[in-house]
Image (cartoon, rainbow, N blue to C red; front, side, top):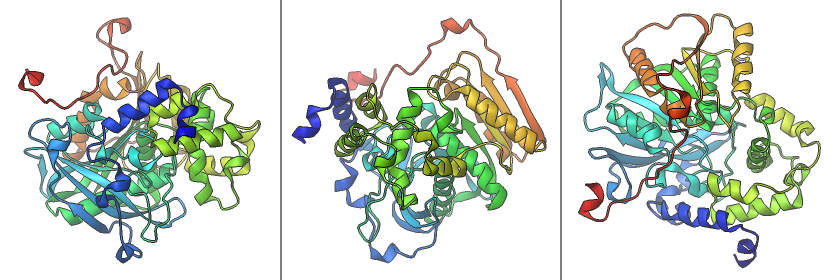
Length: 426
């Protein structure tokens, strides 16, 4: 560890240490909940492997009158290999109901990191708190949220390390669909019908769910919302393209046997990834550790494995089933709106009857794309459960803004902490 700390900037080290303070149950590597045994080896995707029906909410920073469950289920990766995944359920006090049960929204989270301890299910505020999961529960929806394969459960039944296949959106889509199936096994009172909502990495996942539904339909799927989605990561501007690509690289090795990290990463890039893994690096700490260094070899975008992975995982220009709502802020500095514009246009050209609505949000950044349009996507979800039909065709519109753009808070400037004294909560 001493060698690792020697190359960590103070800002990154502070980030790693702060991140560890947000773990509700300690490291997932030491928590027996995030493990599976040999009996799970051949379980079919969607199988419930274990469930913690009542999680101790005192360990978390949740809204009053919400409850938490955690579970582990079987999914499959981009190659179709069976893989165990962890997830959580955030329960409202009095759920909205349909004739078939409590209404479910499958939440697909944004980038938390690429290592096991980046699983939202063991983070005190479930990682994105009031951006979506808390608000959904407070509006009466049961929130079923996958961690994604490789985040949370760190090893297979045989003890083999599970590597998170970052930005492998079709794989994340498997995780979403199978999490809902497993959750219903644990809690039959949940509805068969569900809507998918995702942000950033999770928006790429949500879009991939709509594409998956076109070729592998699942009963009960009502549609998906993709807020600030990833489409083609190699199309992003620098420095975010480098940071995304370095995070993608570890997941390529188990998918493509002939690929090695050294094919596209410099020695410094490989070393810094090793340090991040030792520290359990979350997204913010990773950015501080990687930024400003020569991490990728010249011509890496032309490497056949990178090209193949991008072809398999990109969103846009593919058939979608069911209604898809896409939202993107025009001032997004992390995932450029131009890439989403191009993906939507490509989809419209190839599938003019697709049920796609695209909202462009003036002045909004990455997270604000989600928060600025909350009432819109909340209404959209309610309409899907009400059975309201969505018209065919790709529609694009700008969101109307009430005040001058410069008057709005541009980004999240708070974090949640546990109250230890009565006066902390007023």
